[in-house]
Amino acid sequence: QIKEDQARLKLFKKYGYDIPKARNFILSKAKLSKGRMLEVGTGKGHLAIVLAKKGFRFISIDLDRKAQGVAKKVLKELKLDKLATLKIMDAERLRFPDSKFDSVISVNFIHHAKNPAKCIKEMVRVTKEKLVIADLNKRGECIMDQVHSLDGHKHHASKMSLGSAKTLLEKLGLIVKTYYDSCQTILVARKHPALS
Image (cartoon, rainbow, N blue to C red; front, side, top):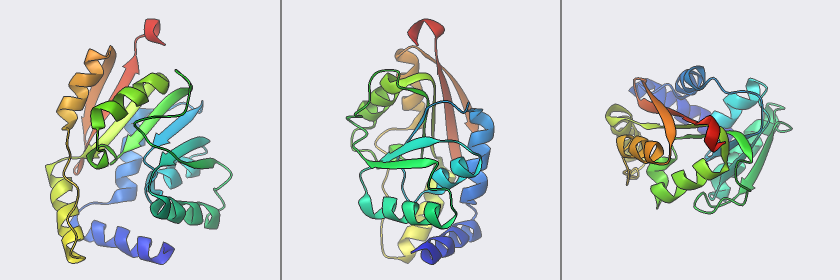
């Protein structure tokens, strides 16, 4: 599975989406502190690996046991598993108290969410200071479609644009900055001091 995932990353890079480089770009814009952190949407661990390599300790949640199993194996093989606590959990109902985490980060998850607005509200609820949401732009979606079509699969289309996500975050009282990468859009949202 690990070799399969590495081959997959090379395939994405060949089509123009360098996933590890994109994760590093997101983190450069996020400027996360080493406090309590939650990742929403572990997937196969592409962001979890980058976070752990940078020395972050965090909890990562996902509903997909198989994908999270890949993440667990890779983290263990890289001897980074002590930094990440992986949990099976629904992002629509996060089992954490309000303001539990200094920061919450979610990359390429929103387009998979059945109810993205509910997930975003939950992420805001458990965030004390900063929420980072990154997802595919049109170019990124196109590359995902191309790579998934090689396997005869169709990639999930997002039920919510990141523009709509930004509007929702601002309605919830957060200050949002938007950054653009070749395949992704990144929202870095901060809670007003009075809200945290």
